[in-house]
Structures are given as C-alpha cells and as structure tokens.
Length: 560
Image 1 (cartoon, one colour):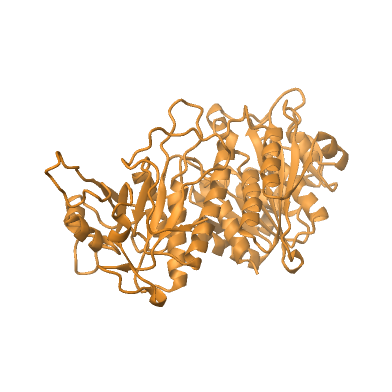
Image 2 (image 1 turned 180 degrees about the horizontal axis):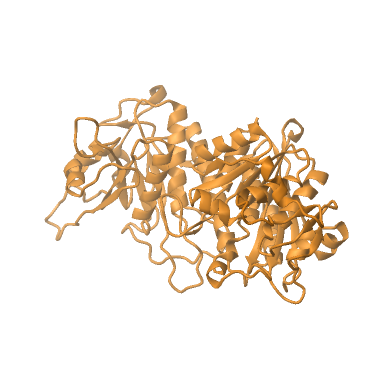
C-alpha cells in the first residue's frame, strides 16, 4: 500500500546498502513507494488543494536521510534551446545554490523521456567548511520526462530506478505537474510508479554476487486517497509482472509441471483462492489427449491447474477465463529445436504464469468479476514415448487432430484447455495467452503482441487496455480463406498447414484454436515476441518481461 509521510529516515544514511540480499522468494518483495505532501510551494507554506498546507522541497529534504533528489527536465519549447526545468527543479536549484539548467546544458541533456544525469555532490573537508547542501541529499538526479504523458512517465520512472539502484531512499518531483485535475495527478503517479517498480526488477540468481536493490521512492507534492489508490494499483500490477518474470526465469531443472502446480497452489492458498490440480490419472480419465501427448516423453508428468477467484456479488459481474500455455521446457520433441533456439525455452510457460498472476492480481485488486486461470502444464521432451509427426490425437471433447510438427505443441495443450473451459466453466469471456509462434515475433517484433478475436468489443477493450498499460497489441485477422490450411484428410483438423506456401503461421495457429472455443467471446494473445527481451529498455528488463499481465489486469478493472 502507498503510505503518506512527509518525513522519514530509513536504512543507511550514507546512501549505500551494506550488502544486497539474495531474493529467493518467487514474486517479491517490491520497493516501497511513499507519498509526501499535497502541493509544492516556492517558499513557506501557502495553502494547497482544499485549503491544506502546501509542501516545500526543503520541508521534505532537510534532515530526511534521503540519498538523492530527482527533478524533471522537459524538452525545449519552440523558439528556445536546451532542456527546460520541470516541477520542483527551480526550488531544488535554489536550495542547493546550483544552476541546474547550466548543468543540464553542459551535460547534453535534452529532456527526452528516459534520460538521466546523476550529479554527485562533494562533502566538505574539515569542520570549518560548510556547503549549502551539507544537510541535504548528496546527489541530484536530472530525469528527462518528455511530454509527461503516461508512456513518458513510465520511461522516466524506469530510468530513475536504474540511475539510483543501490541507494536507500530517493525523493522526486518527477510527474508532479501544476494545474492538473485529481484524476490526472493520479494517472501520472501511477505511470511513474509502474516504471520505477518494473525497472527495479532483477532476476533471482544462484550466483554469489547479488544485484543491488532499488530503494524507497518518495513522491513529493502528491497525496490523497485517489493518488494513493493509483500508486497501489501500480504496485499491484508491477508485483504481478515480477511474479511472471520470476516464474519464467526459474531454470527448468527446478521448474517442471509439478513444481509450477505447487507454486500456483501455494500462492492461491495464501490469497484465499480455490485451486484444482489434475494429474495424469485425471487427465487420462477425462480425455485430455493433447496435454497427455505433449508430456508423454518427459520424466515429469503433465498437470492441468485451475485457480478461481469469486468476489462477493459475482453474480452481477462477468466470468472471465484466462487460459495460459504452460510448457515448462520445450525441446521441440522429435521435431527437435536447434541448440540456440532451446536456450530460452525455460520461459515457454510464460502464458501460464500470466494467467496465474492475473487471477492473483484480480483478487488483490478486488476486481468485481469472477476470474479463473486455466494452466495446462507439460514438458515437451523426446524419447521412446514421444508423440510423432503423423499421429492423430483425440482432444478433449472428441475433436481429432493430425500431427505434423511436434514443436507446435503449444496449440495442442491450449486446445485441450480451451475446449474444457468452454464445456465446463461457462465463461462470458475466454482469453488465451501464449508464447505460441515465431511468426508473430517476426511480423510484430518485440514491442507488440498479436491479438486475434471473435468479438469486436472484446478486441477493442483489449487494445485499449494494452494502450493504457503500455503493453501494446496489434489486431490481426482470422482469415477465413486460410481455414483450409488447418484441414486434414485423415482427421478433423491438421495441427500445422501442409502447404508451406500458405504462410501466415500465426493466423493458422489462431484458426486452429478457434475450433475449440465454441461460441464464446474469445481472444487469443500470441506474445512470442514481447515475452522476452535481449536487453533492458525503459520499463522492460532483460530476459522474461512479464508481458501480458498488466494489460489483462487493466482490462479487468475497466470491464463493465
């Protein structure tokens, strides 16, 4: 929860942590975000919103034990040159007796979102020397805030987190803007907080050298219930993203279907949610032919896990079911992957992690709709019991599928889970999320997920949620003319197209899945591109990114 506090000293006052702690718990804990003050004033308190006192920068900084103060820079306005000082920058410059505009100009700052410059201030030598900043934070961070819209503030928050990693406490006026409505203030605080917390993430490591932590962030010039709620929402969505990243980063010698099922049950129980786990015996008895075939060659048997959140008054809301692909490691099976392609396959269960984090986040946020996560879990290995190209599988519900490529296993476990959800859960909305096809990554790159759907309103709502959350989707068509590419002469359907000239492999996968969703309002998110990143960029961190959970949580919060 966001806390309101105008002064607080925590941790080390020299600005460094004595040692980084090894983070071994899946999904936690995040840095704290604190609200301080209502409105900024140039000098003494003059009265803020609703007659409440304003807060000066000096009020919070003096004796606070903060390790840095961060102020925004904005791009040059037309007819001027050089970055412009944002809210609070003039007060900080006056307090320190430093020309920050000259510093920004000398160091080439433009005010573009995500730029940072850390000014390290010297300490006096001897007791006879007194510097203006002796009792103030020893660092000033200049942060480019761009246009100060949600995207740029997320980038500014992320840049601030990276620039101050290892510090204990950072005070900032970034995102505080004059003459804003309460709603605008809240949205700005949410975006900045999200960026800061998302970039604060570091993968758990088994190595002896642990990454430095990111410290407490104090949002100066912002308080009130609406801002606190926005910061709480940002913290919840960032926490869900951390959980997805942690699960996807866990090595597959640890993370098999049983381990993932145990993690889901542990986290769901802690949140007061209902969990059901189906093992090989139940899967066989109920006819989950796709999940069983994919997991047949592994020493780690498959599972099907459901986690359900039912809020009070659920009868007045909708039932949203999220199905997530959960391949805990993908060798490709008999259609084996090249070595290079296999290295990242521990994260092929990202869809299941997104589904789990979404239902947990929905419960934490008190979403008024019923939410169920369905996670088909298997390890796609090879061996004497592998399923083969040319096999015909009978899926849940009786539909038969001809196999042509054992490395297209994700659509098989999803087909089983979707058919089961359609038949037994009676969802109002059915969404699946998966790192499904390389074709989606080739076509859309690393910034957009592919979106398919049978319901125009659902597609539009997901696109809007993606734009609001910064997790962007691109709507692609379910081309009816390509339906023949998933038809088989020896079964009801063919797993992959027989004619390689057809192309459109991401569309073909979506067309196959459409056969298993009945008449439901259904959307398919192919996140193969944005689910992993090769380097840090803004709020995205290197490795598994957690893409998908923030947009789904935003969709659920906006759903009426």
